Image (cartoon, rainbow, N blue to C red; front, side):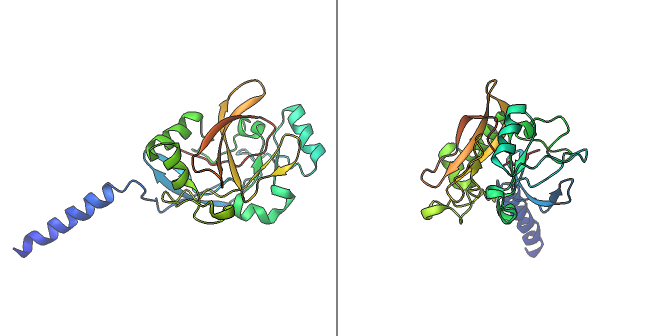
Length: 222
């Protein structure tokens, strides 16, 4: 009888791990600056488990940093790429990454690492549907710490979404600790593009059209 114990045990292990929807891959990905990101496998998609923090395009060209309100507004007016740290404080970068305007998202030089991309609206919706719906997705994507007034999620997915806030198209910093915003590559109109947000006061992840001059976080997918 003992000879049947080992095959049955390994069959059980195979089934358990094969059906694990949230099994994280043991690898990471590096951007052109050498910054290393954890990644997580969710359904048929692989996502970064951290916000993008790169300062150069894939070809090595620098992405302009806009520290002043005038620089940020000028980038929007000229429809040119720009990034910043929240409150222009590099210490925020370690947790929240950088904030980018939408012109950096669509720049043909490439913002994402090789073989990765900025998620389309379809990518975001596929993730949400895999997790059940917007409410269930919001709870599972949000980090289990760092959100104001107990507005944490359960981080069941390992996605670890933190409330990095945003920079408005007028150059103002808003929402750190309370809200997180992430771009898609989906253009919504001549002045707007689709973004997804999470907040401490509400549980679902929501999609809205935002002005392209806003500074949002970015998660890459493949």
